[in-house]
Length: 400
Image (tube, rainbow, N blue to C red; front, side, top):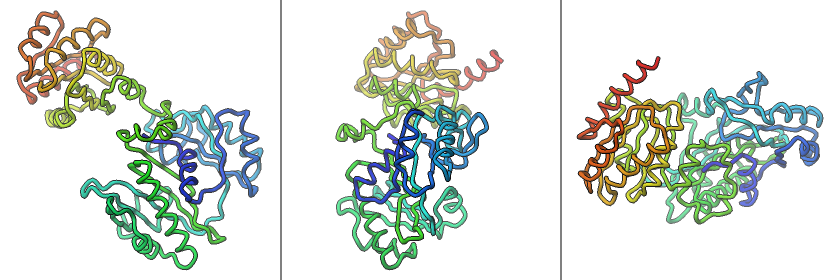
């Protein structure tokens, strides 16, 4: 789960991480009061969406930049009015962009130097890793690609937590000395406390800045959380903005379905995360492209299977469906009944390939055979993937 920058900065402040003064607002009537809360005579106006690259982004009406630095209150309010309700397109949003529903007025900082700082999980060793660089800002991806020697990494033992000497090492690698080094060490240790306490998958400051008056400040903030931990953190769940999420994924959560939208054309309905990933791999191997990851789990009900088909068919990119079920705890009969029930409420206009194996497979196949539905049966996963790719190609060609 992701949250907005203004929400992340509120968390930063709770954990003792220095951030500029800021005020978020959701309506034009709030702009003037929010601008009055910003000291210093310079206003930074930021569009709030769950995507990076806002500063270099362009709105669909041609207005450039989701981050504007203004020198008068009137200009700040004018910039905010141009952003609110407008659609911002960045490298991370894709061409569709994201509608801006929140504006964040920020205090400006006198920047001496920009840095990059993040903590995330290194899955190769199952440890959090702190990543830091002297080259912060909007082009950190280029730094990682072209000059990786400018990036410092420190791995944290999760059973012990981040130690002071590790913070000292990073301060040295970034070139901090004296009071700036003390400030940085406190900041990074507090950042790790936030990462661990809130079950984060990512905390990122880009840029973290050293100011001309000797302060170390988190100028931007990005925080992501482990969805599986949200039951422990209702205060985090309350920060969720479902308008920033794929509506299909929001709907899937209501039925406890593990669904992630992708950009392919063959929808997958599978039981088990490992089998789902294998199914996507084999679709690619056979020349197709998966439209989603959808794991109905090991004990799905007919209602859940029906909901899964409804979500799948809402995606205009879907040109075919591959159902791949290996029945262990899950019954193939339940899946078959779910498919038939779904067909009663959801019009399935694209090719449907079904591979069933395992628990109650014969009963499931019988239900499908007697349903009257146009279904292509498959004997194995590779057979199902090949048939799905072939039928989708034929379907697309016939509907050009």
